[in-house]
Image (cartoon, rainbow, N blue to C red; front, side, top):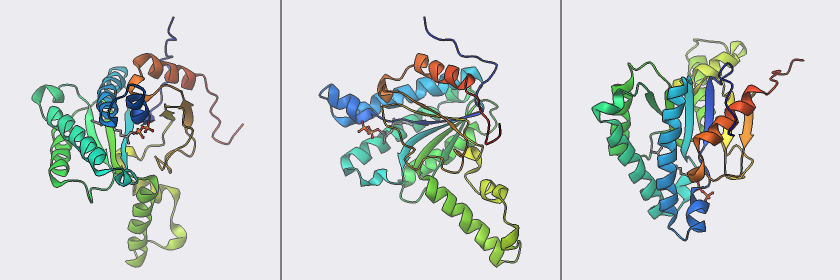
Length: 240
Ligand code: FPP
């Protein structure tokens, strides 16, 4: 029998590293693109389920600031998947899902039509009241912290605040607003045990959940397992 999540204790913010698409495809003798395509389907299943559970915020790592190093054909194929999903999210029935879609990451270098679609979808879903679904595209945790530091430095330069008065809250409040909440749980499938520049500031006290399953094979049962484990963790935040 599958474990049932303890719905009394749900994470407020979950970060998910969608890893293993390439290996999933290779195992089947398919092009890596087929792995990303299947990964996009799983993204939709899990984001819908998070909405159904009433989770406040889920951040999916879709494309990092380092992923531009991949062959152009693969980058283009991933961009096409974003386009496909963004067109789908523009459909009126999508809005009825009640999720609030946000895109975190730098928009520099992202194709202009995709940036426009992102803006439309954010605008279309901004009055929804359900789960915030963040899709991290051209995102890097260091890049996000650097942006925050620069914004604060400007305030210091203008004499709005004193350097000595800078607080943790100042750094948090200058991150991407939709993902600045501390990440309670970070899920990484595919058997890798690293953070890969994801939600660096937000993960100071995150609980981590790793599994050998490749992202395209990740199921609602796996997600439930992660939630169940999370509900049984003893979080002390440095206290006793
Ligand atoms: C990491 O697996 C995956 C990516 C860099 C791309 C993730 C993108 C998707 C799942 C598509 C998302 C689409 C939408 C609509 C949000 P990998 O390629 O590094 O896998 P590997 O480690 O097995 O090679």
